[in-house]
Structures are given as C-alpha cells and as structure tokens.
Amino acid sequence: MGFDQYHEPPDELPPKTRTFARMIASLIEEAEAIGWYEQRLAVEKDKEAKAIMRNAQHEEFKHFGMDLEFLLRRTPKWRETLKGILFKAGDIVEHAEEAEEESD
Ligand SMILES: [Fe+2]
Image 1 (cartoon, rainbow, N blue to C red):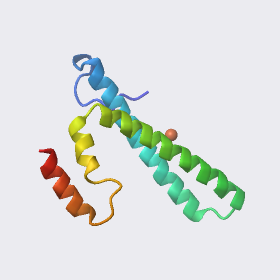
Image 2: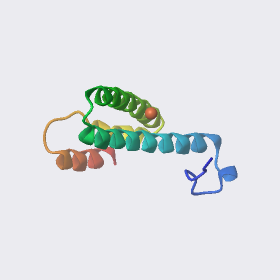
Image 3: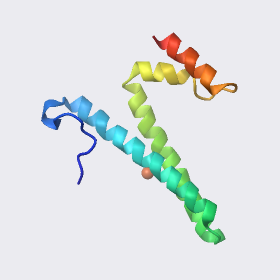
C-alpha cells in the first residue's frame, strides 16, 4: 500500500487534510481509469467487450463526480472557481480567467 498522496509527514497532518489527500488520490485514479477506458475503447474491435468497457467507463464518470463533489464541498474557493468554468458554452479560457478574478 502506498502513501504517496502525502507530501508532508502524515502524522503532522490533521485528519481532515489526510481525508482530503485520500480523496485527491482517488480523484486522480478515477480520471486515469476514464483515460485508460477511452484508449481501450478506441482500439477494441469486439462489440461485446466494448459495451462492457463503455459501461465500466460510465461507472468511473460517476466515481470521479462523487470525489470531485466531496472535495468541492470542503473547498469553497475551488467550488466558486469551477462554477464559473463548468457547464457553460463559450470560451473555456475566458470563463476560467473571469472565474479566477471573481473568486479572488
Ligand atoms: Fe472507479
């Protein structure tokens, strides 16, 4: 079992920060899984195998979303910034710049 999510001595970190670090590690793993399934789906020829992989990737979307929501509920500034970026049409970079300014 790895403890790579810590960049400071774990015993010096408060429980909330350790939980936050675990959820960040989980978010990264879910994002990696989504990417891996994307690659597998791109090369798989068998329809049935593809359907299973598509279903599995869909599960990872959900896992990623739950991890992200958990983290955002505990990080208001992050949440505020993402509110300005996510689920909006238009220029992503422009929205991000505006969201950064508004959340400062
Ligand atoms: Fe997952």
